[in-house]
Amino acid sequence: MKTVISIPELRAARAELPGPVGIVPTMGYLHEGHLSLARRAREECASVVTTIFVNPTQFAPEEDLDAYPRDLERDLGLLDEVGVDLVWMPTPEVIYPENFQTWVVVEDLTQVLEGASRPTHFRGVTTVVAKLFNVVQPQKAYFGQKDAQQAVVIQRMVKDLNFPVEIVVCSIVREPDGLAMSSRNAYLDPAQRQAATVLSRSLNAAKDAFQAGERGADQLRAIVMDIVNAEPLVALEYISCAHPETLLELDGSIERALLSMAVRVGKTRLIDNLVVGG
Ligand code: PAF
Image: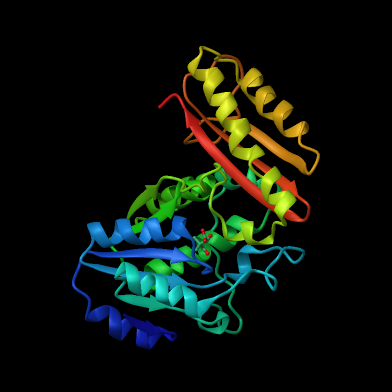
């Protein structure tokens, strides 16, 4: 496995790789969720490139950029075990040279859900992902369903800007007790970690109700809300029952929906989601 930092080094190494090339963009501190993306890419592509870059532009000033967990040595060991060919670990200066002022913005899809409370987040994500695609020139790119809105936004960007990249969205990987894997789980103390199971518990309760015949969008949101509100260590930020592609909030009776939520457990913000109705 080769590791590179600069764009000239990356381009030279990329030129040697047989296609199709799959990219797995990450911010490091890898867990089973990331590794499942890398393994899927390994199965489907002749070459796999992983990027490790804690992208400053997707963090708001009050968010956890400096505290974001990092363990490069461990990450490289894990990627090597999966059989990744090339790891690109650019510095912020490589991605954002002095006087950088060009942004990629997906409009309506980024105003809701995560975008409503994190207004500059998706501009940072789409800009960095567009740059990673431009430099690495992959044929396939792997993202997790855990960040459901991110996957929808990137699919829109790829269509709108004609990137010749197939986006592959992989299922959420969960801990045995249901908590979705996230680098941010590392911030939780034992009591918070236990309380954090309320995300998947409440979403599953709504899914069970849907499977038992409940179709009311308000009712499904209320099921999640009541369970989260009964957990004193967890504060609900939002629970959404939205169209899985437009991300617009649904009313009345639904056939298919993305149920997604964000909570705070102490200072840690956690998200989770599931799709009901296929
Ligand atoms: O999902 C992430 O880890 C990040 O948003 C991504 C896609 C690597 C862009 O920085």
